[in-house]
Length: 353
Image 1: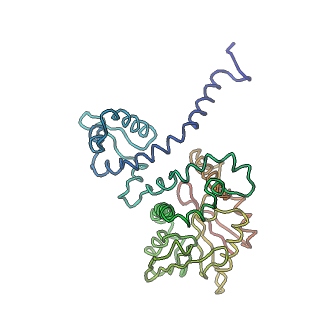
Image 2: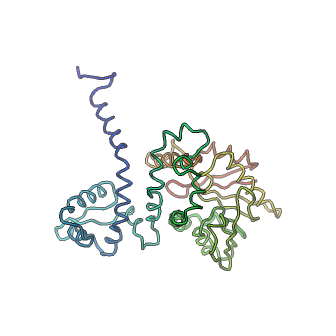
Image 3: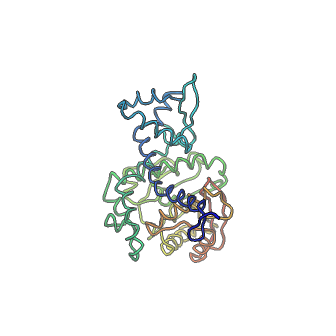
């Protein structure tokens, strides 16, 4: 009979060890991404115009000979995980970009490199060493504990990091251009929209370009929108969404509500309801956010949504399933809602008063 411990055979135990070590060393995945962005490797391959050999890559990077094998290990690991493709050019092994690493080319329109740079800034990423203390402290966010203030207050007091945050959010918003090509109906026929928490206006500009007759206000913290200039159908307004929101036919909340507690979300939604109840029309609120659906989503998609849930929990926010969203809407006074898929992990939710 095969030996067992605690009723589990050796095969199960070794599988458990593999899973444990995979997550134990998962931080290396993030650091490898940060490394290739800092080295500019995706840009180098992109500018090379074709797959690049390791000798060509290390020559451009001016890597010391003693570190060439370490760069090879980095590239091999990231290729194994889908960030590069190993191909043969003239019988030489070369590295090509994949869909994932193309998103790290800084010169491309759809670049998420700023997201890597912001999320993995040591000031923020080191905060996660305080998770044990955070779960024991009532009401405090992770950043209250690690940085001495809420994340938003900390960003307000640190212009360089605040700039990095805005660039990260703008890079994510560029993905909306691709997503909106297949769901223009969301904004079809609208006259006046307010993009609450719209940052520097990347999403709003995309919407305005697609719908030139649609007037749009980007509404965010005064320090975010200062020195920004609008256009014929785009204006910037500073304010506090917890106090009031400019009047409009439609309110857009992209990646906003997951940052906040249920209580805060209900307050924001009530202000949204007030803002669209101004002219007798049946306005609506458009939410672009995560909807957890473990029964129907692919395992990897659910994995992403759940890790995002932990990230949002650290600022006392959360990702929500449909029932949790519905509860918020009803408590804020809305009567109906519809959910539509948008990207692999984001959905569009329309709610009606």
